[in-house]
Length: 383
Image (tube, rainbow, N blue to C red; front, side, top):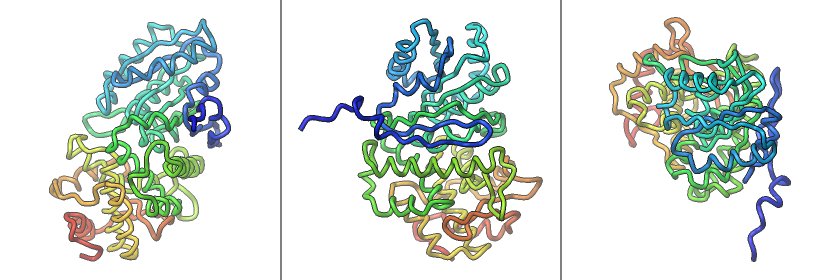
C-alpha cells in the first residue's frame, strides 16, 4: 500500500490550541507544518530566523515557504550556539546588533527554530528589540514544544543563575511540527517527557494513564499517543498561563502559574550543581520525586502517590534518584532560586494528583529526609 501524501491531508488532522488572554495566539500541532509559517508571520518584509548552527539543514525548509509566499521578503538567519550556551547577554547582544544592521522595525518578525534555549533567547531578543516585536516559535524538541514555546516566558542566564534576566513576551504563534522529532535523539525525547509527566501530576491525570499504559518504546514521533501527550501537556500549560500570565498567583488555593514550577526548585539547583550537564527534563523528574517525598512528610501526601511519581518517570527512562551533591550545597542554591519569597523557601507540592498547592517554609528536617529518600533505588516513601 502506498504511503499517503502528508502534504495532501495534513490540514485535516492538525490540532489548533488557542491561547486566550490579552495577546491571543494559536499553537498548531501536527506533522509537516512548514506551510503554516507564512500565515503566522503575516506580511512582514523582514524576518530574522534565530537558529542554532546544529540545525542548519532545517533552515531551508523554513525559509523557502516564507520567500515563496512573498518573493521580496528578506529573511536573515542569525546563527546562535547550541543549547544553554545561547542564553547569554553576549549572544543576545549579537542578535540586537544584527537586527540594527538589518534595519529591523516594529512591523518585522523574529522566528525561532530550535530547542528550549533557542526559544528562550529568541523570545527575549524579540521582547527587548524596540520594546517588543512579534515572534513565532518553531520548537524542534519535545521539551520546547510543551514548555518553552508556550506561555511567553523568555530569558537568558547570568552567573547568578538561570533565567534571572528575561521578560514576559507572548508569541504571535507556535508551530509544533511533530515530524521534527523524528531526528531527535531518544534521550532528548525522554527528557522532554519529564515536563509532560509533570503536567499529568499537577493537572491532567489522563497524561499519567497514557504513560502508564503505553509501552515506552512506542512513544516515538509518529505515535498518536505521543501526539496526544503533547497536546494535553500544552493544554495544561495554556490553562494555567491564561489564568495567571505573570505569576501573580491563582485563586481558590491554586498556586496559579507557579504550579508549572512543580519539581523545579530542586531541579534548578541540580542543574547548576551539574554545570547544566544534566538535561532539564531529567532534573525535573528528580525534583518531582523529591517534592512528592517532601509532601508525604510535611503534608501527608499518600505513599502510593509518591510511588506513582517514581513509577511514571522511571517507566519512560527518566532518573528518579540523586545523591551526587551534598544537600547543604543544593539547599544554598535553592535559597537563591527566584521562586523564594524573602528568606522563605517555597515548593509547589500536591495534595493529590491534579491538586497542586504551595508549601512555604518547610522544616529543614523534612527537606533532608526527602533528599535522603531520593538517594538510592531502595529508599521508598517513609524511608
